Image 1 (tube, each protein chain N blue to C red):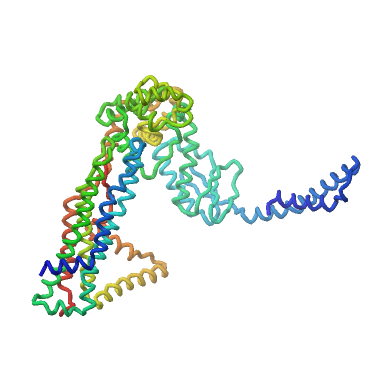
Image 2 (tube, rainbow over the protein chains, first blue to last red; image 1 turned 180 degrees about the vertical axis):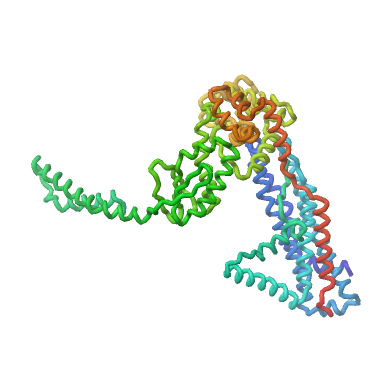
Length: 217
Length: 364
């Protein structure tokens, strides 16, 4: 059954996945362009800044892929009102686990692309003395970022419309409370604190933040 | 419309009105025309002056002042609170670097001119004007910059030239230390490498201390000199002496490379530890030397540059370089790492979200 689900999910999400694989492979190669330029040897800091600037795209790519694959995993079920899933002789948790696992397997492809691209990119340039290449570490971090965001978007997609309404309602409440309290003169930063709770350790999205450096000290 | 344009227009109009049909003029007629033009000019000026004065008055605001330590800032009334806070921050930063010598700033008045809205504060004519936004942070930064120029002007000329700029206290000194670490680690200079590995003579060479005429000889070996010529020095310098360039780059003749570099402006040759790092070293010496360090530094003017460092830091130059090196190595930027606790937390979140998806209420 897993193979069948894997195949159907592959069919639904193959275009974004192929694009993701391509982008994942190209990103490390593009990020080291500055390293091989003639004056790169004398401008290490500029080169590192360039690598860091390109690095912003890794979490964006990972989160985008996770969002697409996570949403597409449930799209057909939502459209068919879950009739197909209900017709299967498996409990819901088993079915959801199969879908989740299929998405994880599919997302391994762009992770591998980042890893191979990173190894190739660092092998084709002369890295200034004292600096090091981190293709494996970068790929591992990319894998974790993809996994966490995929799980998050998968859970949101798997939820009911009512649940989505609750989440949106809670966010709207936070926003309204903040606007009202600020208008009353009390400076409350609920949204900021909420965002910080998400992206600062031990928040779930902490893995997306920080420096994504293919080459570093 | 500006004064000049208004006057020019009025004078032109008067001139045209006064001009008769084009024909030959006698000297007396010409004099008469000049006299009438002058009259028109003065009349226009008399009209323009009060108008400009009124316009200026609308942008002038009465002075009010914000004082923190030795800093006295004339500020527009709407910016006094921010000016006071900015001056306090600026004073604290200035004191941390210039110590007791920052007190001489009490002899200088500063006048804040707001960037938006464009307002000029009424202040003594000799006051040092600076433009800033109406925010404490911007005022503090601009004030620190202005005050630093005044204080750095007291430094020995040779030290100032060696640094290549004024000492401006940095609100984020950690950034400079990290940048220095990268330069020390990656500069293609044997001197910088020796410094990184712990040889203090390497640090002295990398900083060109004491300053020498052909510092590139201290920084780079024959291979690097050839690379500099090949990759950095280009354009007119080389076109004038193509045979030297050929000998240096193609034949690998180091004497040709040296002669080419001797013809090159010093600023065009990349220093392994450049201007920000040099200024950073002086700041570090002042920090190590304590509140009296800047005073000792200015008192040592005229002495060799390395002796000035020793005077400021109150320790021999090599000791200062050793402490500096330790500080730089400690500021090593964190490379891209995946700490085990971070990885476990991410995995745990992934599993939690996955479990939430399994336990969704959709089919219940």
